[in-house]
Image (cartoon, rainbow, N blue to C red; front, side):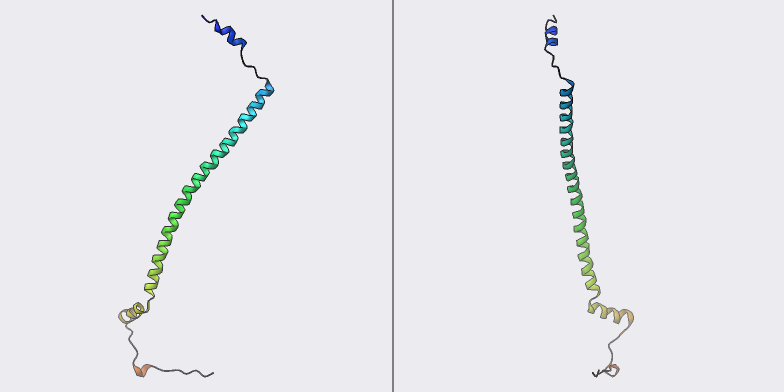
Length: 106
């Protein structure tokens, strides 16, 4: 029934210690190279996601910056300042007798 068993023992593959070490070093070296390649790709994908998130934040901040510039310009407009001076502070236009002209001599 197990007539093939003794024949397979005779045909076993024998490897010397030196050959085993060479194969082991080669396999470990290939594994290290493969892991470095995979790690670099994983790192690249992580950096791409981080870049996209930072780009989204930058766009949001630029949009907010533009809105703040528009608001700043509207707050410092002369018409608004004049309106606030008249209504809130109670300032009014000077009368002609209140205006003094100053001439500078060189």
